[in-house]
Image (cartoon, rainbow, N blue to C red; front, side, top):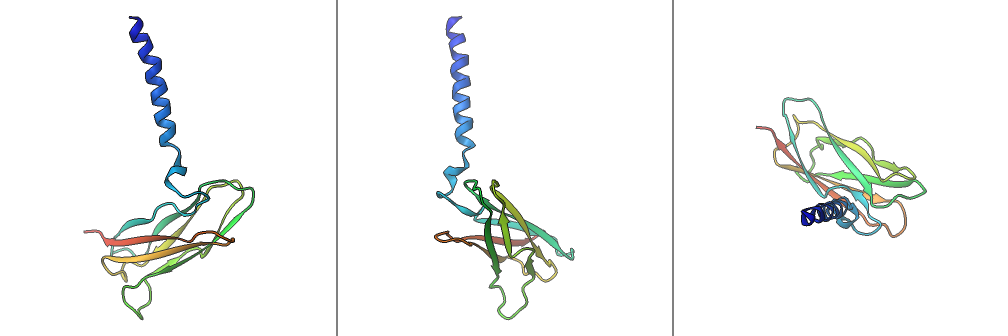
Length: 143
């Protein structure tokens, strides 16, 4: 019976170690990273809708005691010369002091969107030596 009582504390310790290692998001990003939470996402749109929104999130690995400004831009190379069927809600965002993220949206016009098209969004932090990050949004029509 004594061996069973030793297993329980060991199992609890192992579970705690595993859970804390899984929650450390810094392992997935470079040091001092500020940019998109994901590098690529797929949005399934309904071509009957007038408008749809896609939420995008910009994260910072570390909190800072000052506000941080990032600028966003978006392009699509689907049909040169044609008006893009999307727009960024915000072209400049501020990650507030002591915060680690901020979100915004891309608004698309499903009726003008081409099946299998892509939007490339660029996040440019507005301080020296910061790295630019990119997000690719794949647009797929719901069947």
